[in-house]
Image 1 (cartoon, helix red, strand yellow):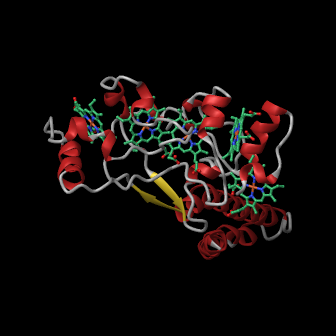
Image 2: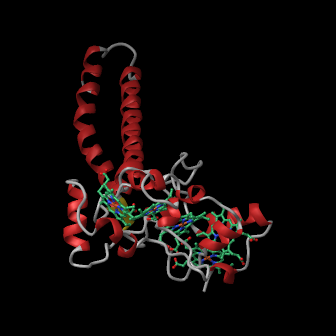
Image 3: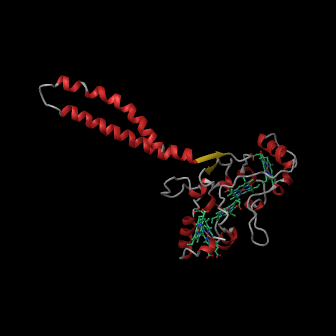
Length: 239
Ligand code: HEC
Ligand code: HEC
Ligand code: HEC
Ligand code: HEC
Ligand code: HEC
């Protein structure tokens, strides 16, 4: 829809511009070469008209479309992974651990933070906000989950991390060592995080090193095919 709109504005702008170019030609060369210069310049006008429309629709596809499709949110608190990683004893496991039954704790909750943040230790505004708005009143931080899959999908961290010995980075990129939380982008049509589709609209090529892997159904299945030789039955991933 947006590209049609743009073509229309282009059309109404381009016509008056093209007209003065074509008008003088017949006056100057009346006796000679009948219509060749004017047809040449109208050829140019058509070409330019096409190019402006083409570039316009490319720009709207690559820039405007994602702008319209995704709404943006910030995490409630700008959490610094890197600074914490230096202070905890068990690395990632200090906050993202496996319970005895093999289930994965996922996002940390207040219990993982309270020992160090009963009171603010610095005058960092993010820490003060964390303590005043969440720790003291006893409210869990509503972290946004960039990787959240639809409810019908079954994903097991232990099958991948413990079973297949995969690193966190191989799927999540370098968020574990980041200094700031990343903007969360939500697909307005599906309600899912942009990370599921991946940040490349065309899905061509591989994600940059450090970026999370896209996690559409085919992405899971493709890796399973490579690792195990088969894509797996539907019920492997669907409850
Ligand atoms: C001190 C606690 C702490 C430690 C240690 C920690 N994290 Fe986190 N992690 C968090 C918090 C809080 C969040 C939620 C805020 C955010 O997204 O940054 C989070 C979020 C994440 C997410 C985002 C999930 C998503 O998709 O939204 C990933 C992935 C992650 N951590 C990986 C790691 C890795 C890998 C390490 C080790 C290198 C690590 N974390 C160490 C506290 C911790
Ligand atoms: C081992 C102790 C420890 C644990 C556990 C811990 N923190 Fe911290 N945190 C600190 C210290 C110390 C600082 C101050 C670091 C600095 O600025 O030098 C800090 C700083 C912060 C800040 C301000 C700096 C920033 O931008 O991140 C926030 C917000 C924060 N912590 C949130 C959390 C949350 C949420 C958790 C639980 C998931 C958590 N912390 C767990 C010790 C801890
Ligand atoms: C095979 C790829 C893969 C690996 C390896 C992996 N994750 Fe995940 N992670 C996912 C997927 C997919 C989800 C979304 C699961 C869902 O929503 O059901 C997720 C979700 C999360 C979340 C959000 C909370 C939750 O439980 O949904 C955190 C935090 C997280 N992972 C941290 C880690 C850490 C830390 C490691 C390393 C110990 C790790 N992940 C290894 C793919 C992976
Ligand atoms: C980068 C590679 C990779 C990606 C991406 C990946 N997986 Fe896996 N997955 C594996 C490997 C390796 C195993 C272990 C296979 C085995 O043990 O036979 C596995 C095992 C599993 C299992 C357990 C199978 C069983 O019966 O024990 C489930 C369920 C699963 N994956 C679901 C998913 C889902 C859902 C996604 C996408 C959201 C996903 N995986 C993405 C590599 C991957
Ligand atoms: C390797 C894991 C895996 C296998 C095997 C798998 N799926 Fe999926 N499926 C997913 C994931 C992850 C999603 C969510 C992401 C997406 O929309 O692509 C999904 C989404 C879907 C959806 C859309 C649901 C929604 O709410 O958006 C349907 C329908 C579906 N799968 C059907 C199937 C059928 C039928 C099979 C067997 C032929 C199958 N899947 C096998 C991982 C898997």
